[in-house]
Length: 124
Image 1 (cartoon, rainbow, N blue to C red):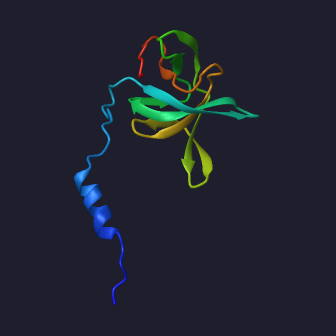
Image 2: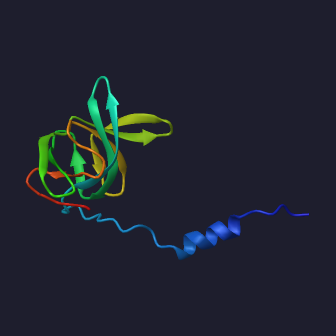
Image 3: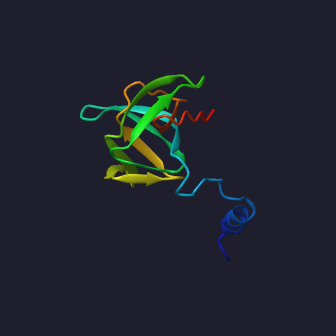
């Protein structure tokens, strides 16, 4: 007797639900919505979130805006980490659609928008 499984159900879900819309055009400006904050003894405050558009590299100048569009701070991206298995791995750049951790902004908080300095891109 065959074992029941959910493979056919999961296959139909994958076939019928479209993937999330992400701006993958390289000319798009970087934007990220902060969904989690962590603290690291070596790197300070770490802002975690999904890159909504564009790409970011270590050394880029970025700004953090609150939900009302007020500038909280501007600084340089010091480190970019991505989750690989259960570890954080350091990368030099990140692209649209990726979940990343950015070190360099000490005033960022959950719900803030991060974008290139001077872009003023509010995400919520």
